Length: 226
Image (cartoon, rainbow, N blue to C red; front, top):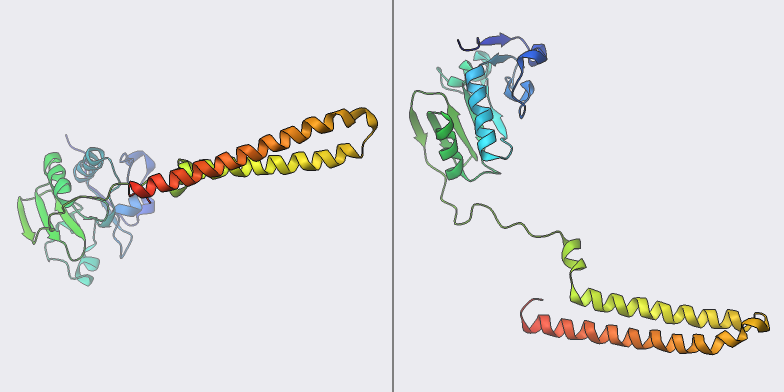
């Protein structure tokens, strides 16, 4: 025996114990004009199954409509929205072809296509369809690009200039240390010549880092990776 269809004066009146559709809330399914909600378990089960199959959010433009709200928005006199068995889903994050195929697989039978408004209507039937299908996209979605900070962190140019910067700072630090130690007690004066050698080592590292950065930049330019 199927779960009964229930109507609530407001979506806030729906008991938590009755709501089992984890990716949706009563507010999303309720009438946009009145807040009323007709809870149709079979329709919501199919909606959740569609969400599970697609693996990404369903942005609901319209679900249940009270009769007065349906008239106000110019809905069909016998719209399935008033039965709680219809949903208008935005295509902003979906490929319409893949969406339609998945919706048919989970049991939706009625389809309305609204490419200019960016959504597809689905309902429990009877089987029918209307409207002009969405244009076929050459690529459903652009490939995701790595965040800028990740790209920069992997840059050979940055690594080279980073090494040069660290070495330059190190050389400057050694020079300051030399001046401090020169003014210290005589016990530490023997360390000063060694620090001078260390400063020149840092300078050599800085020049090497700059050379690596220049080489990497030229190499990327040759490969068209600018």
